[in-house]
Picture 1 (cartoon, each protein chain N blue to C red):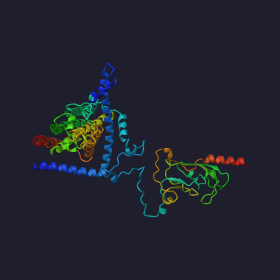
Picture 2: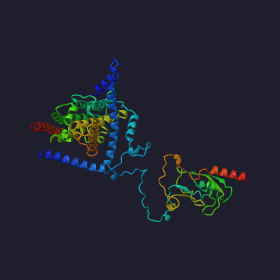
Picture 3: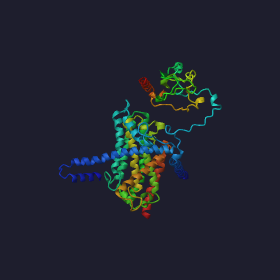
Picture 4: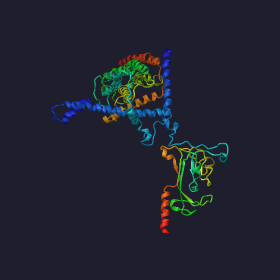
Length: 357
Length: 193
């Protein structure tokens, strides 16, 4: 939608140009650069939030300082920038026995997997890079690209810890996609569409029309989706692939500098993607919680980002509260708890919709 | 089957309970925080009670301090120093025992000694000092001393004397501009006469 809009406005701005191919390239590059800039800025903010929230939960003060220089700025506000500069300026080490091609390829692949999900994320009624008619299905699909990259990273490092991490992440992500998908199927059943914008428009009219309050089974579906999403983003309590107390750093053990930064960035980008999907599917997307007020296009962006930020805060909160699961507990939770609940939800919501819908 | 559901219920309630505790810590972060941001904040110094009178406590070797108004420039401490970390340069005073206001020179010490010398340089390199305390014994005016202990009434005890720059560890006790001021003063005197 944004690409078409930019292309049309460029063509109307310069009607004398015969050849419109450069316009197409430019109108594709602008959303690309904007999305990349958004991910970078958002990652800096969330890294700072994570440092501060974790410190406050542990009764510490987090990064603090009085000014630029030896300290990290007022309240440590420059800490994420200092971290980014440190990562950029670090030595890039490739182990001598690593498979060099795959080792170099893996961080880019994982970032691509996180990055291309962004083109289907709606920020308000018109700001969406591409309004795919299978938006939610597309996001679930490209989310699985991370598995290949994680296995590549684990395998090519030629390191026991990395290999264990890659294998664990493959098992974990493939397993948890099933309950996440089952929870979203319930949403799709209610909204009757795979298009992100149509799912949001279905929830029009205030907080009571949000899908999470549609019927008594939806909060369960939301919790199942949210926990599965946590597992898919490899965050604590599901950080088995990079569990630092057992596997040093899992699949990122051998990575340093810029390549490590890509893994880091894609983890935070994935957090954003799953939060936006949860907000779209259950919490009304860019709709205002108050029916008929505060729903201008700009407020739409505000509602979308604030709901997403709330979910990301809950993710950080959970990370610093709950200890890591064991591998067998992880599989037990997925296959023996979430899968039956997800299947039960589908039947229950179908019957509910037929009886009361 | 019942155990399956009670297990789910137990895990939900315990996780929510834990998250409640962490949230209370999150919002009470300002009151509960245990971090002391050292250079900006310091713990209050505790009441010092070492079990006996400070005067009986021989000496606390913290760092050297010189009372420049009492120094007569006899160079005894410089000679006593086993590591040669004290550097003193003296000039002959124009009039023995008289004040020179231009360079804040005090003519008579607290012991009543009339000074014959003006100390233009008195540097102690504290990074070289071996804390042997040998310089304080020969001093006839008792103007060089280790701070703290029995001397705590003469100079506040300061235990934080780390410096980011090594040059700052050279303590310059002579008043700045003493040499130039003295030369100028003598020049003016000779011009008058």
